[in-house]
Length: 228
Image (cartoon, rainbow, N blue to C red; front, side):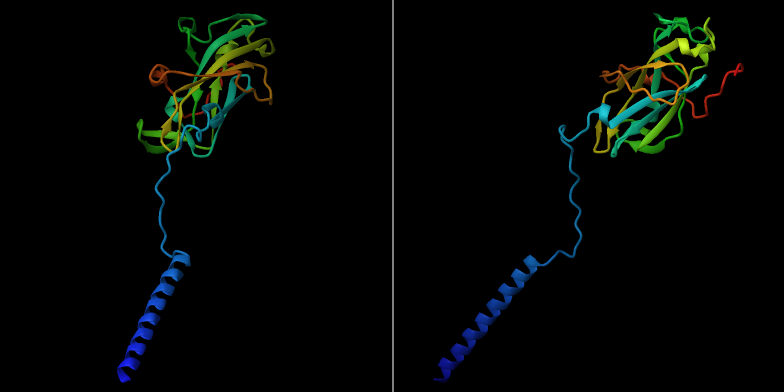
């Protein structure tokens, strides 16, 4: 009889122990985690990346007779390389007559003439593609020197003049995807205006064939010519 009671007590204790363990496991599964974990970085798929024309949105206006202002709005998690920015003169139109006309000294020798730029300092980074470089995030404003257009027969009469310029740039997504250089075309009247012009067209250039490595930039403001 006594042996039977001991067996019953042992069985009840074992059952209670099993139920306690089971309860603790269930409670732990339902309880919120108190230890922070870091998920591995997610690589963006091509479908998740913005098109470069949407990631980098430039606009252009003539600020005064000697300076144009080019502002680029940069999407979050994207950036532009400072030393990969350039503005080329494609065409200069005076009173309806089109042609690649001289702007400044020896300009006629350059089919693709780079216009002088003022570019502010960028953010220094150690880039996986280009090493130690400066980049722009969010927004950047460049100043384009228009002083050369004051040297022709219609100098001072900017209402009769317009230019076709190409803005060359290159940028990346922060997830590690680098875009090919982009060429965006503006047709811009040279009359001073508060209105902004958007690009008329945009194309991608082959990697390494855009001539970007040969350009020069400067960080000081564009200085007006002596005739201003």
